[in-house]
Image (cartoon, rainbow, N blue to C red; front, side, top):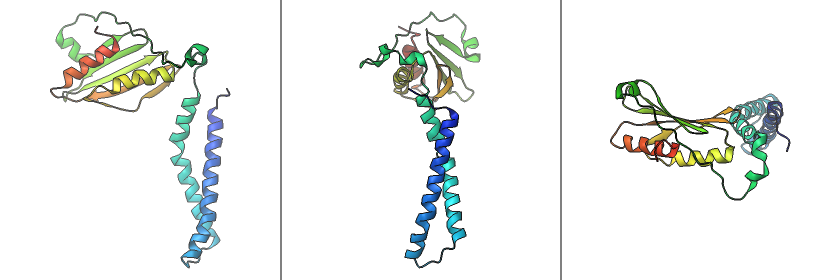
Length: 195
């Protein structure tokens, strides 16, 4: 499978913007005639340029997403991952370090497993910043892990970040309230910190 480069996706994006501009310019003339409005050629060309520019800026995220989806690490293309069953690695927990309550409130408390790290950072407003670092999982496996974390109620998640090299990051905020501790406990269970 040929992986598209940034140049390839930029060329595709440019062609899409040019096609949208030409389509808008050609379509503007019949619409103007229908409404009995004289449309000079420069105005028609201006409509095409504006439509092409809008398409160029609007398509940036779409093509970045496409490039990210198609740039799968070669290790993820092994035949073992093409099995019909979803394979999610089990996360092994390490015992948490002993620290007093004040030290844990000042520093994020990491919880590490073989390929997942959960960090909880208390904020001054009472909320807790949650960061999940995932390393060495394919996109499919990451989406399975992500789905588990996003089902925990009481946490507002942001869009995950692809850090390249098989590393991805999911971050969110646990709002202050009576259900916050339950949500954080559930996150720690999913991360393998508790049994």
